[in-house]
Image (cartoon, rainbow, N blue to C red; front, top):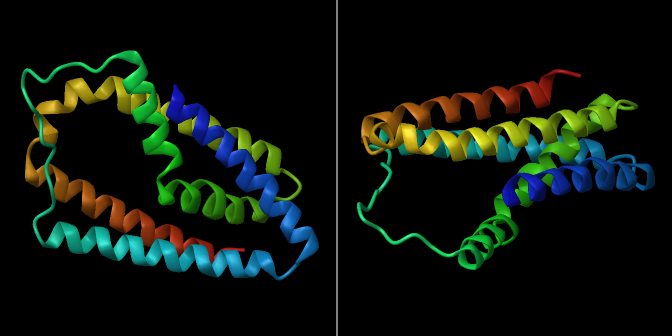
Length: 162
């Protein structure tokens, strides 16, 4: 819930904060579009390279101690708010994509926030059932390839689709 709510807040900041900057500096949208596409290309290539080099696997410790609520909340806040990718993805990238949907940016922000909630809750509740699969490097290779292809697709879409 902490990650989903934080993401929704950052999406709102990205969509409406960048819209305000665009109103002051009209060429900012174009700069963000190309910057976002460059970021997606680099990230996609890194994911494909990781898959090529063998990928990762989920390291699961059996019998690990459960953390208390305070520690869990602080960890979730730190992972969310101290992660530079969250600002690139939610604020910069989604903000620049939302600029293509003027005057429907509020609808875009709501849709992106709902998708984020679905993602985080699916991730949280699905993690236990996928545990044995995510421990396999071959599964991570497939995940890395899919992420890489999707990031490159988004970059091309951002560059060439008005």
